[in-house]
Image 1 (tube, helix red, strand yellow):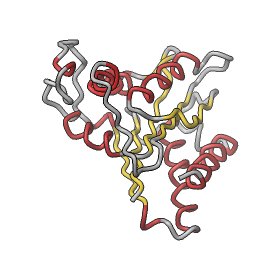
Image 2 (tube, helix red, strand yellow; image 1 turned 180 degrees about the vertical axis):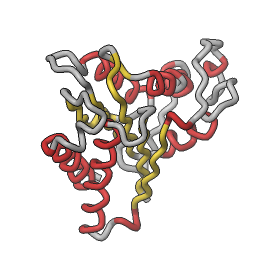
Image 3 (tube, one colour; image 1 turned 90 degrees about the vertical axis):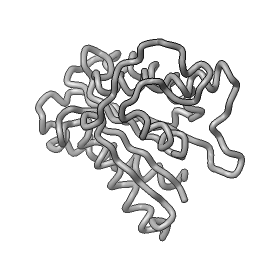
Image 4 (cartoon, rainbow, N blue to C red; image 1 turned 60 degrees about the horizontal axis):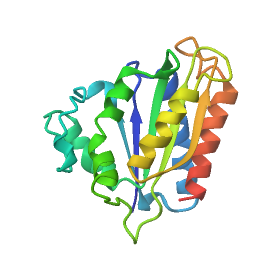
Length: 201
């Protein structure tokens, strides 16, 4: 069974980044069905804006424990992250960076960083495919560095989770709330990436 965990960070239901994420998942799901593999894949989508996630307090509890001392919804997310073969994080870009919901989540993944770099633990099981991460982002503005900062964060975030940064779908110029749904090229990029994901599963 291949486990795919998709996290939508936008506070808007059906916002641009979530629209791209849904289109990516549609491409992946359709291709798995075409290949007769849909029964072997479990896809779970979670909206981070509906989760109660507190900010990291840098208490260092996770330096010796594979969990966090804070009692919130990250307690339920940690085992899902540890078991997932594919992790897809979708976020809007605010001020050239992830939005608050995405960054809160990323910061609270410090237990994975501590496990990997302080205790030299690997989350890659020998009998499983290589763990991989995808980043989906929607930015309102245009420019060569719209996603640069967020991509650097994702590189090290996925590395801390013992995942390869496999691919991203970052679309700029999506200013209106419905811009992604009204931009066929953006939807096609996300859909095609979903199809490519299934071929590499």
